[in-house]
Every structure is written in C-alpha cells, then in structure tokens.
Length: 316
Picture 1 (tube, rainbow, N blue to C red):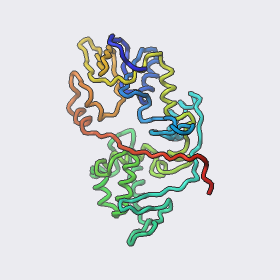
Picture 2: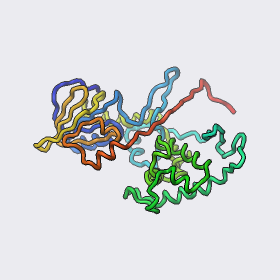
Picture 3: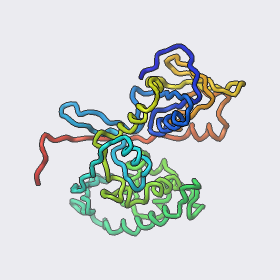
C-alpha cells in the first residue's frame, strides 16, 4: 500500500526496503510476535525481482531475477514451495552467441564467424581452470579470505597478468553479466567470493539441474515477495515511502522519517537496501567513518535486458 499519513506510528521494528531480504526479515519479526513496518522507496515491492505482464500478449516476463535452484538456494526454494508456486524447468534446447569488443560473433561452441587470425578458443580453458582453482580457495563464511593474499587488485589487473587479450575481453563481458560492473571497477576478492557463493563458474553459466539457470516460477519471481508481504498484517508494507532520516533517540529508540511525511518510532531498524543508497539517508548520529567510506564508494550493478516474444513457436 502507499504511505500517505502524517501521523507518527509506533512499532517494534522498522524495515527499510521491501526486497526479498527486507520482506523475509519482516516476516520473521512478525512470526516472533513483534510489530513491524516495511518502508519501500519504489512503487512496487520485490527489489531486484520484477515480474510484469506482456503488453500485447498473455503471459509474464521477468525484468529482474529469473531463476532459482533447489540445491544452491534451498531456503528460497522451500519458501516458493510453501507459497504453492509452480516450477518450470529452463528449456535447455537453446543456442548462445557472444559478441566480443571487436564486434565479432562467437557461437556457443566457441567458433568465430569468421575466425580472426591468432585467436584460439582452446586458450580459454586453462584460464577458466585457473579461475575455478582460485575461487575454490575462498571461504564464504570469512569474507576477504583468498588463497593468495597479495592478489589484492582489480579483476582487470589480474587478467592482464594472467591471460590473453581475448580472454580479458571475454571475462570483462562476463563481469558485466554477473554483477553489472566493468572488470576495472571490481576487486578480485569480491568476484571470486561471488563465484564461490554461486557454486563456481560452471554452475553460474550453465543450464540444467546443477546450474543457476534451472527453474523458473510460473507465477513469476515477484510472487515470492508478494507471498511474504501478504503474510504480514494489512498496512505493514508501505510503498512510495523513501526513508530520508534515521535518528537514534536518547531513550534508546529510533525515529524514522520518510520523504512523504511518514514518521515512525521503533525499537530497532533493519536496513535491507543496497549500500550505495545509504547516502540518501541522514543518520543521527552519523555512521562510523569506516562505514561511511564503504557506503559512499559502492556502486550499483547496471544492466540492460531485452526480451523478444513470438506469436507462435519457431520450428527448426
């Protein structure tokens, strides 16, 4: 629902952000017997999950998160089952192409059309093995750990030290696809932690039961967020309510103000928003210097997604 009241509300916990994390936190708080309010800046819930209807045909499309996997994402898989959502396996009978920085187009088997002089796709495999070996050294329970501590550098710097120009371009494109940023903007530790958390390169890139692109949700991934929101008391989730100020009170509570003149007093606040958006909020007292440095320098992932629909199935 939209927030439009000037009256101050009192709840046990305010959750800022109505993505999966914020809504799951609110759900758990409610189940524990505490009152909760969820404040969302956008006009919709779901965060990076964004299911919408086709404008000209029947059906749903995903403009954000698309797949889940029951093995590497067991908690969200069980939640989707609990919400009685229907799963559809990804159609693996597809072909992929890659366009490199020179404009050349590669098929899924690595065959270039036409093949440029001096490029051998087989050169990529030893480097992929090197990446898999490096990501395997990460301990995701201890952020920042890596097998070779002195490799505190950007992904681009590491690529220049370890592989060919074509592989550098290939992996740079992969970085943009995985996290929405260029290899020059990514720390090597961060990328390896991301790959390890996702089950390795093979899992992230493949299609099938043991890969990230395995199951779709017939009702759309946003149905997970909606199911969590529907389990909360009516009026608990307020959209179009960007938080502008969070003040810790001398009484031990917290005062929260939104851009649309909503005010809340709570015992606790949970921030479930991207760190780069923290700068939109005035904190009193200010965040610690180290925290301010991090949140003022992080960047959002930037993606473009194109969806093509057909009036009838294509027959080979």
